[in-house]
Image (cartoon, rainbow, N blue to C red):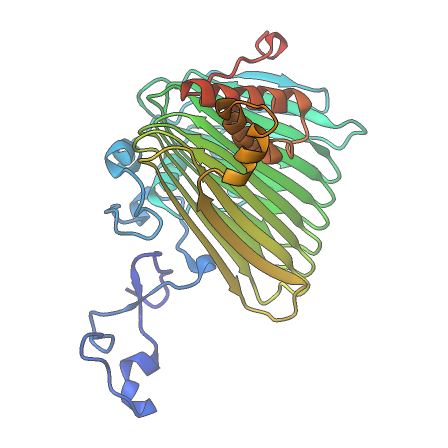
Length: 421
């Protein structure tokens, strides 16, 4: 590989001079290491150094051995990795306030790439295939703008989608992407929060049981701006939503929340990344999930990078999983990189466990039947995050959906009549 070509995440880079000549430090290479051999190289170590490209052919074929693909069911995802997706415009239903616009743009819309570039083959396949861009814009008004985009007609053929959400300077509002029906979809969602704006983006996955959805979200947060990002994953066969937020201006602030409920045979994955790349930025990540049924599998990978420019950073990430039955699997991997010591604070936490027997005992001792007590414990566990959305109508729908999950093992969200008119 040329020294001027950026490395792929799981492809090698040229070894350092010290690695090529370890004897200069008075030590020889390990007999099983072989890093001094010309065909042995050092992989990319830092999260921010991952290779980025909008060209699917720039990425190698996915084998499943890569760090960001090792848990995923590749057989089901393969149609979205091969390229050749249908990236044309699709039907959607929008409900919006006066200070918000939703419109189709051309594939070469200048807003594309404002928030980031793909870091894996699935995102690059969707990027390459786009024929149209759905542009969502919130204007700076005195009102708190609200946009709901319902998408339910993707069908069962491999599709690509590209959405750019822009909050203009000092705008404030919420954008909801409400996904339903069947889908075999790879998409990119770019989020640009300009200086002084306050934006909430909710991605709701309530697909049919056969849906396969891969989604990459890129967010760029401006000076003294705030982004609340919420991922809710309930329905579908394979759901992989990977949001990343770049805090690249002083005072940028983000809160990233997630709620997920995996049933038998369902796979739900989230890879979350927060890049503190400017002074006095703040980040909070809180994802919670529940699992029930044989073969239910969830994956959460949280990466936080506090860069050299991140003086005064205040950051914390956590993931909690509640296991309701045998036969489930929850993988939870928090990662924290710190390149400067001048920070306010940073930390991470992860936990996976069963019901708290003391909570159940407390409720049962007050006359609540065991089944109802379990329902209340799970509901309380997940509702804490749902209530962070800040949209009462949507929160009520999601609470009802979680209750339906507990009752039937699947998600049914009944949308209010005015949302579908």
